[in-house]
Image 1 (spheres, one colour):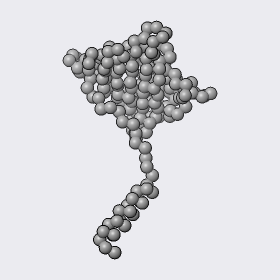
Image 2 (image 1 turned 180 degrees about the vertical axis):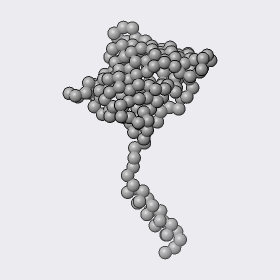
Image 3 (image 1 turned 120 degrees about the vertical axis):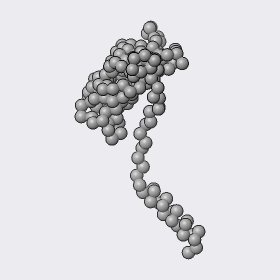
Image 4 (image 1 turned 60 degrees about the horizontal axis):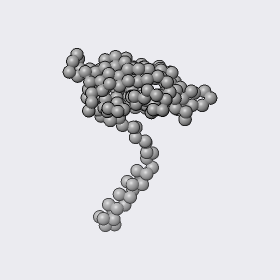
Length: 182
């Protein structure tokens, strides 16, 4: 067997072996926004996702937030509180409360629908290495015909396994995002 034929056989063998190894889905990647800009976000809101409910799950979660960040004053780090409570969704491992232990990032953007991105470490029952990512969109709707605020969150454990997530419109309550205009 010639050299080229041997290389072709080895290449086909490697491709065949690669097909036998199970493929693992890549975890969703969070945007690498690490700049804390002047932001204040506060409020309390309940989100319901109908597709995540069944007779034993409401498909709901509640967010309570009171956070600020001003890189020009104070420590330059985010400060305040964040909780995600009453998680009751069909495919979430966590069916309880999540409390933020640290807020490592607050990045906001937008004027008409200011949006803030948060991430940090959290505490949840039986979750080692709890980390969260949260997006809050303030659609500034003061009437029934406007677009509701939107909240999305994602929680991982120390092994990078998704423990809870959800994104949906605010059913009741209000979130206010006061960002730097950029």
